Structures are given as C-alpha cells and as structure tokens.
Image (cartoon, rainbow, N blue to C red; front, side, top):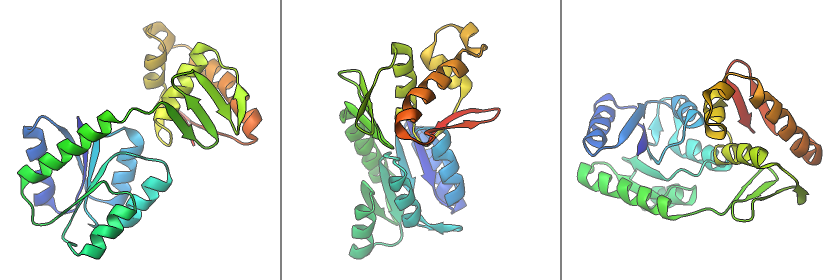
Length: 221
C-alpha cells in the first residue's frame, strides 16, 4: 500500500515515514504543496496524510484543488488546528478523516488502515470525466451523451486513462498495461492507437481531451 505524507516538519515527516514503513506501508514524504501535487500527478496513492500549514500554501486550498480536479484518493488531515470549525471545513472540502496534533502513531495507523480498507470496498462500475462516461460492466462508452464504438484495445486504453485522469502516464507504463509483449512497447503501436482514440473521442467532444507530453507519454486532461 502506498501512502503520501505531506508534512513540512522534518522530524515529524521522518517519524511518519518510518512508522508507516514498519507497518508494511510504502510511504512517500514531501514538504510542500507543489511537491505534493507533482507526486499525486505521477502516481496513484492508497491514502494521503495532509498537514495544513505548508510553506507554499494552505493544505485546505490544496485539498480543494485536488477534489475539483477529480483526484479521489482518501485524505486524512493531520493538523494542529483542532477547532470544530477547522474540522468541519476540512471534511466539507473533501477530507475523509481529521486527526489533530498531538496524536499517537497507533491511532494514525489505525485510521489510515480504515481509510484504505473503506476505499478498497468501493467498487466503481462507471467512470466519468470531462464528458466521457465509461461503463465497466457493459463495456460501453459515451462522450457528451453520444455512443462511441471502440475496439477492445481502444477500450482498454481509455480505461487506463480514466483510472488515472490528470496524471501524466509514461509510454512504457501504458504499453505494459495494454500489451503483454515487450516488443510492442518499443514500437509506435501506442501512437497509432492514441491517434484512433483521439479521433473518435475528440470529434464528438469538440476539443482536445489528451495531451502529448513530449519524451514522456500522454495525459487525459
């Protein structure tokens, strides 16, 4: 399980990272809003521990931006702001839990474990983003209400992006999820399928949906 820790205090950040590691979690520790957003765009996390007083911004504003962008990772706010008003505001902005400082590591780990377990039990059957609706049961796709006819490979490709919208996905990662052959990873086959997918979806949507990140991969905006 991968946990993102957003905490600017060095001693506390190291303490959290080590404590989670001892509980068999893989923890990534960052200190700023910018680093946190970069980390979240690069990979998916099972839960996020978020401090509010960060050197380059407020954690609540960061949380609001994440939720408005469609990131739905469970978030546990860890903050010295322990007033009822602060807790209510954090929960209303999309936090899943709120733990005031000081705290016990045992309670924090228990709450993180609960968030991860709760998230794992929620099975999405429909993915929606930016006018695209992908049904995982019927294997159908709609764009702005219009049916889109996709091949099985195109559907699998779109599903990868829908599960990771907003993230920049490297070419090798996408290819390895779609094709089992390492040979295919080294060809321009991905570009061919991306061109087909773009043509089918963006023609109906009327504007670009995918961004090409030169030298890296693609991003569903």
